[in-house]
Amino acid sequence: MKLSTLLTFGLLFLGLNAAIAKARIPIPYGEAQKIVKVTDLPDTEEFQLEDGRYFDIGKMYTISHIVWLPYSNTDAIITGYVDDETYVELSPEELKEIAALAKVEIPETVTASFFDRLGGKIILGLLGLVILYGIYASYFGKDEDEATEEKSEA
Image 1 (tube, rainbow, N blue to C red):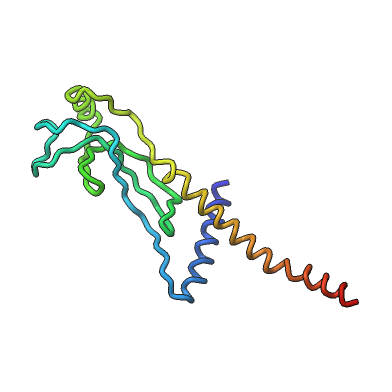
Image 2 (image 1 turned 180 degrees about the vertical axis):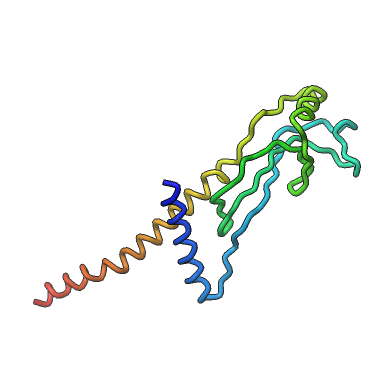
């Protein structure tokens, strides 16, 4: 199942690249790191960085995307959240200590958002089906039209 899905996405990507390369339209693709806040911590000295900013608890993962639609992601890990681009690495022991100090509950496991896990795959799959249907209709739909025209002329 995974092999056929990867093959379909690969062929779709190659076909789109070839078609769009002629038109000179760039396709945005690549990897992006996402950092999302999970738990808000109080802004006290215990949770202040050396530069004066405060951190919260967040999750971090990397997505692979094509045309801004994610098709793959790494496992999410719990980190210290500073902003959408900055994080602090925290060990499990530090997380337990932070939870005790702040009197908050920190989840033991986190996952990527629904859209990053499945939403992009669903949309890309539907887009692929529409393209495949268009190709099928353009190649196999002409014979039926010509056959009906010949019957009407006779």
